[in-house]
Image (cartoon, rainbow, N blue to C red; front, side, top):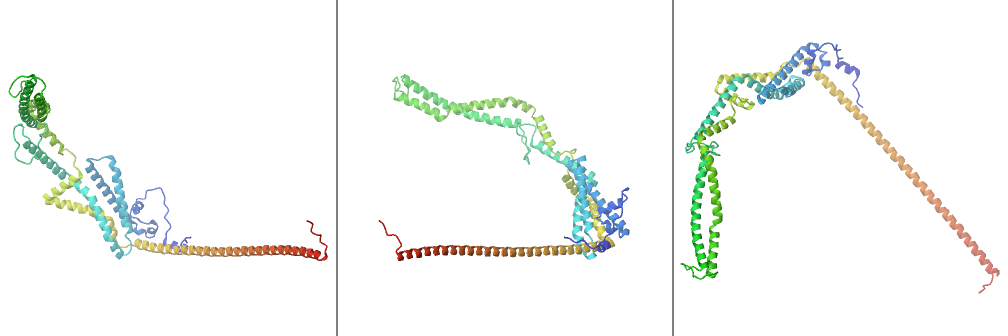
Length: 461
């Protein structure tokens, strides 16, 4: 069990809570809550309430600035304000509020300890200040940033349009200039591409057609010779004998072999397919050549329209890059942006700076004393609780030992009783055996006496 501190000790370090009227809104008390103040201790030094009311106001102001920063950042990311942005804005403001409240409420004690706690907390405040300051800096310099982005987009669109125009002449027969035209030539389904394809198909068809004519000529000559031989017509290279003789069969085999070796059937089919493709290309090619210039212009406009335009929303990363470029070109803007950024960082660091610059107050010393007393009371309570638990454990050990001793005694008694019963049983058995032996001995004695006196009956067979 945990012992409660003595009443006289608690009364010297805890002040009774001031009664609340419950009828008016105590703004100062609410602000002191943001500073992490214990009202019971502060009630003993009422002159320091103003100090902690101001500290709570600083914490609240930092949270409001953080919420405004989140609102501006979300509006820049999403391209405009929306009512749904209130949720992340409030959440971020509460995070900063509780973080600052923790920072100022844990900086207590003497100046040596405060200095040791200064640097990590100040580092946290500086990092948080950078995060909060950047969206506000972008908001302040929004006009210059947006104008710079618009000008850059316009220049990029103009440069891309010039490159597309140079790499895609409006005349199909024109040759693009010697420049970097990677991903800039619009040759797919254009008149120039169709014309190139048509010329290649016609050249291939001409070569294939000449080869087919030659093969057909050889085929007709050999076929005529085979027909003359089989019909018995006497011509050059024939025997003049009618019928399917050996020479007729050999010539027929040569005709079939020539058709197979020269791929006459496949070549004729391929030539028909090429002629069909040539016919399909020749039809729309004339219409494409007539409107080629307008088509190129429309394709260029389509490609340029995909790029971000001056009227498109400006994103957060684009704003940050534009701010860097604008400030790099203008020294005045560079200095102004960093002065404003440092101002916002200092504003975010104000809670910890105010707490540290305020020095050690009476309230801080009382809090330290209260913490030490509570620590000692807690330590004493733990010792008392440990003593109680150790006593219970010792008592339980003694109970277990006594219980084991009693069980051993009971086992001994049961063992002795069992031994007594066993001895009684053995004695009873011995007694019964003795009686039986005595009876047997008595009977034998009587039988012997009869034999000696002749009173026994003779043996009759």
